[in-house]
Image 1 (tube, one colour):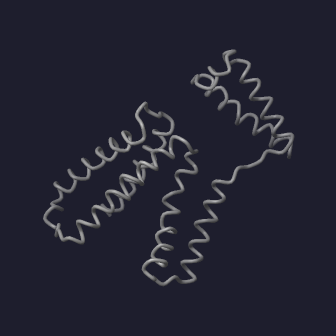
Image 2 (tube, rainbow, N blue to C red):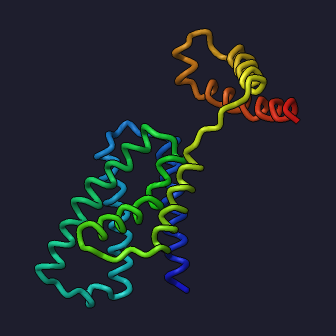
Length: 194
């Protein structure tokens, strides 16, 4: 049960860290941010490994060192830097899909490169993963009345904002006012459609 709790805590930490990184982007570039996060996570894992005696179970071989090197370069350097970069440029709902798409890529690469068998259940699972990802990333298009209502609510929120257009883009107050007006507009739109 300890492993299940650790897994859930890791998932929670990942979600909180991703959300925090998206909402509070630092001045650091993606490479520095990724390096700091991996260093912090690595120190926690090394401490846990030392406390639980995991270092006694390591059996180094040429194959394990090469595998570790590959994971370091492809999985950590390239993958994590790409993830941090995506967090700064894409909505978090899109970025958070990568853990679901990664197994699809792994299965397809295993089938292609290692000639691993693929069953109808695997194909069905891939379909569910890709279908769910498409649903999450699909943007809803408001109807004409809803678009007008959203526009009106945003213009009301915009009236309380600073006159300079570039200030409304960077001001925390402007962002909060716009975000506060959006749910009201969506409710008004839903009431009109009903």
